[in-house]
Each structure stands twice: as C-alpha cells, then as structure tokens.
Length: 242
Image 1 (cartoon, rainbow, N blue to C red):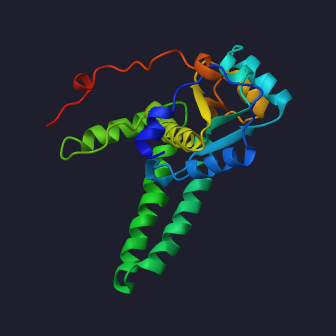
Image 2 (cartoon, helix red, strand yellow):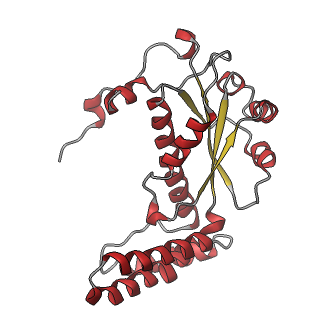
Image 3 (cartoon, rainbow, N blue to C red):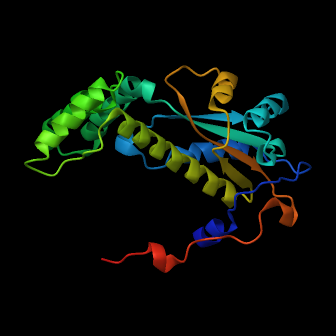
C-alpha cells in the first residue's frame, strides 16, 4: 500500500480475531520506527512497553475496563511519558549534538554552534522542564509575559503546559507506530479508557512517569472488528486557507 492506502486501511479495531496472531518481531520493529517520530526539541521523553505475555495482557485488559479492543488483542503497547528523565535525555542529546556539529559543520562555525546547543540544552531546556509544585512554572509564566511585552515568545511554559508538550510528542510516536502496523497489514486501537493507577502498577513505573495511551495490536475479526463506516467532519469545516 502507498501512504494514502495505509491511512485509509487503518481503523480503530474493537474486536480482533484471536485465532490470528501477529509477529512479535514486526511489532517491535514498528516501535523502532516510532522513535523516528518528530518530538519537541528532540527530547524523546517516552518509553514503550510491549506486552506479549498472555497473563500480562489479561491484567492489562482488566485495567482497560475489560474492553474487547484489549481482551481480544494479540499484543499491546503502552506508551509512557517520562518527563522525570529530562536531565538524562538532555545530556544524551547535547553530547550527540556536539559530535554532530564536529562531524558535519564547517570548522569556523563549530564553536559558535556548540555554544548555542549548550545554551539551549544546558540552560533553557532544564529551566523549561523543571517541576516543583507549580512554583517553577509560575516563574516561567511571569518571565515570558514580561519578555512578551517587547517581542514574540512561546507563552505555554507552565508546568501543566510542559506536561501537555511531553504527551503530544509521545502521541506522535504512537501514531507513527500505528501507521507502521497498518503497513504490515496489522490492526490497532488507541485507548484512553483505562485505570492509569492500575496500568502504572502493572508496569512498576515510578511516580514521575505517566501513561499516554494504550495501543492494542492484532488482526481485525472480519466486519465485526470495526464499527461500520468511518465518520469524519466535512473537510471544508476544518480546512482554512489563508
């Protein structure tokens, strides 16, 4: 299939054919491809938990309120945000960027570009991703409002704003994964109906981790796997040309 065919094929499948199994290696490869998704400042504050064991899948199904989209699935992936790992990821990205500049930039521009990355990943990003009961976020909001009196500036910098940023980036990875699965002829269903406390307990996640979404994987059970025709708001209601 070409891209348009893949996007038209992909549906949120609610019932899978339990007799038809998926290839775990292909699902894992789909997650590898998911890491290519665009994300804010290349922070990659995500983790993917690939559920393949039947017992774990049964427990996950319970945490997902018994939905057939999980109880009949062959496998599932839990997409998790890890804003609490921002220091570790910052260090990794900064070191990569330094090497990237040294390998690919003209020598006379390397020093300036490295200093620019050090400022961005060494000072600005740590300030943006720090959380402390909303206090640091409030400081950021006040600061950006003051600067915004004189020039354009990103204004969504509160602690809740940054949480949204992390979840948006993780959702892009989840969407990339679902497209990759459709390319394999596999079906998926993204779910937000779950008990996040139970899912976190199942994965033994630390307090700073959050569940972005659960995506079940399998092969649809004929026409009963999807809820009839696809419904979309008319395109001319959402498309605005400027």
